[in-house]
Image 1 (cartoon, each protein chain N blue to C red):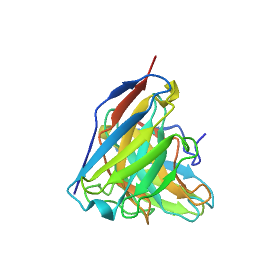
Image 2: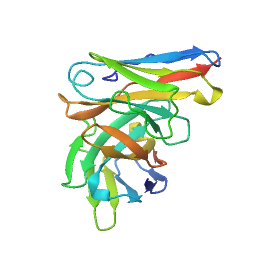
Image 3: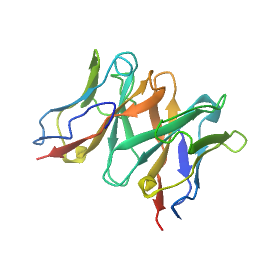
Length: 110
Length: 119
């Protein structure tokens, strides 16, 4: 049972848009920054978004992040077959004094 | 930009301990922390803990508290994670990740170390 809640899977056709939700509480998302990671099997996870909505250099603007209250959202536009991966949200939890991840969301390009 | 190189795969017996290393290069080691994250087969990412290199402060996940020790050697730029009392549930790929404490994110990852616990 993850502290942050994500949908297990989302899917869409190439070129379409998907959003992935990440629900938490006041002790994590509500008062701390959210980051997002892309994880392809057999590779190291990759940082996509930090500080809720900032993209590192080299991450295309098809990826976006937003936050409202105790929930965050990752958006992917212009979906490509290369975007098929698992996506995780992460944050610091002040009550646990620990880092926490969501359970992960598998993105499938139909 | 930086690079994290992890030690190789290991097979351990139940009850044993394992120590994984993570050598950092290409950045100032003491300016960041190092987190350890694992992924068990068919499972998601699980944060195990982190060490702030500048003062060696650590925080551990409750699940592994008491079994895990994270250390760092600033003379060699290597971070270590030792996990004891291993069970089959500890079979996983273990990653080290450079950690930016204030904003809490991991911007540089090692390639992972497979730890298999089997009798």
